[in-house]
Each structure stands twice: as C-alpha cells, then as structure tokens.
Image (cartoon, rainbow, N blue to C red; front, side):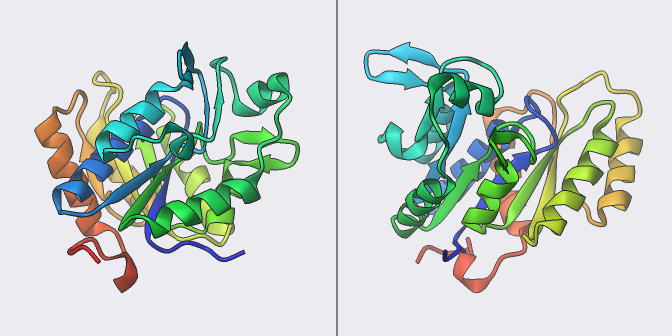
Length: 238
C-alpha cells in the first residue's frame, strides 16, 4: 500500500486536548498562503442528527477551515454516541476499514496541495479488534504532529506518545503545545521539561483561548517549523 507525502496526521496526548483547535489553525494558515487544503476526520464519535445525517462538530470545524463542502469525504465513519470509537462502531455493527480510509485519503491528497488528517482520541485509541489510531496513521504513512495538552500529567503522556509514534516507524514531525489549563502551576517549567524530554522545541505554543489572529499566526509558525520534504513544501502552491 503506497503512502502519502503531502500532508500531516495530527494526534494528541489524550482526548479533549486541542487536536481540532490546532488542525483548523494549520488548515487556515495553509489556505492563507494560497494552497488548496484537504481535511479529514476519518473516524468521529459524538455526533448530532441532522436532515443530512449525523454530523460531528470537529469535522464541521475542519471543513469550515478548509472550505470543504463534502461531509462524507471528510468524515467517512461518524457515530452518534460520545464514546470510544471502537465501542461506537461495535454498537452500530460497523467495522472500521483502514484500507478503505487509506484509499480515500490518497484520493483526497491528489485533489489538494496539503492534507490535514485529524485522529480521534490519543495515539493508541482503539478502533476495533486489533486496530487503533496508530494503525490508521501507519496505513496513511503521513508525518505525525503531536498535540500536547498542557496540564498536570502531560509529561508522561507526551513521552509515551512520542515513543510509540517513533517505534511505529513513522516520522514524528514535531509537537505543538496547547495551554488547555490556564491555572496549571509552573507551566513554563513543564514546557521546558517537555522540550528536554522530547528533544526539540515545540512547533508552536497556543495560549489558552487564542483568538483567530493568534491561531493564524501560530498555525503559520508551525508550518514554517515542520520538517518537510520538497514535495511537501508549504512555501508555495504546486
């Protein structure tokens, strides 16, 4: 199965740590550079019924950031209960097909300059019997961006996630800090510790409650700091 090159897979140290917040910032910043941006939330649980079918808020936010209109191509597997995707899929009698998602992602990548794929939950969040988000990322072969939610416990979660990503054989392109807890004690010291433990400075550090201008600037900063190949350059469109 061939792998993709023109995009990133955004994962996180846990659920509710800002993957969508960061992914939409990356998509918006890339679009501001004149690029056509594709987005995917391959699997999402926690959706509301509409006249057009189930809709997940994270997927809708990604679509708005990228200017997408075809929901099915962005979020192929969508489940209503806000529970782990493997449980939601099991309850619905659905098997999440990683090969199918990889085929869709390859098609999406051919239609755009850059593809931002956002995972669900953390790196090892299960998708079914014997498969997880890590397996989905491996099927796509995209460089991985790790979003670290800055809160108590983030050091352990970040190190374990980074180690697992590297052991998978994928490229950990970088990590992004997101200040989800404005009351976190000694967050600056924790940030310094993360830099030491992960071996690199963050691609960007998002403040708590970042406004649109800040998110655009930080998304652009993250893009500039990503280690990318010439095919995946974001300095000019194809």
